[in-house]
Image (cartoon, rainbow, N blue to C red):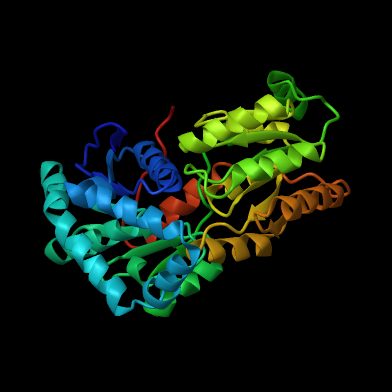
Length: 380
């Protein structure tokens, strides 16, 4: 993926943003950062770090990652014994990835030399740090939205680390005690601040106004046995809006479930998530960027414990933030958890409206602390 944002800057400033296509969350943050920079006159390019691993390496990296996620004990073992601690295997894998991608990274920066390299993906952070060694005048930053940093996120020549909690900040300092770290709000796409009313959203989906309705999804890859969970929820009398993401096999199974259970409303990959959240009483999902979006819409969360490694860390942090419960993906347990959560939520006051400008102000203020000062936003 390569995208651009913003117009020409008279000072010659330019940013390179390194995303990563493992899930949608990295791209969401990259696009938000590109927009914030563009509104302040700094054009940027968004490049997929995985695409820089050209040839078999690009595909192999994704296959290996998906394969380990599919076997939770394997991923847990690698994450907690290697990635989180910077073990020998993880360091070698990181060095191999950097060696493979760096020639292509240099082609990108030589094409339009940036004065800011912002990485939303750990391997991109390694490339930015190495580039800083060659170009000391360039500002390097990493934006990590996970709740706890593994060692591959943290490199010595990164000027600034942007994180979304004090917990994450201390995890950076675990590896670099003197690192410059800024805690900012996580960016959420503008469409989540402009959702329809629940009644309007339900009317568009054919969901009865008084029904108990749950949105079920698990990231862009549709991780976990969502089809069995959806069927169990429908049998318990709930309306279920189910999203498969890019998982075509799961989408087919959800469509099959809808044939037998008319209260199931299936989707594949869709841009209607804000509307689907607005229609629901609760969102069932894995811990990740969807949680921030649901909080903006004002929906509580039942979190599936289906993503090993960093997913378990993210789940615990979301529980700490409140407005969330955890459940195993077992259909009976999940159904009970959802029913209990809906009952508990009825007596809670609605969430305070979110302010979409907060994170952008924090983002630009954080960059200023390392000398990358941005002008005020340009008029729309």
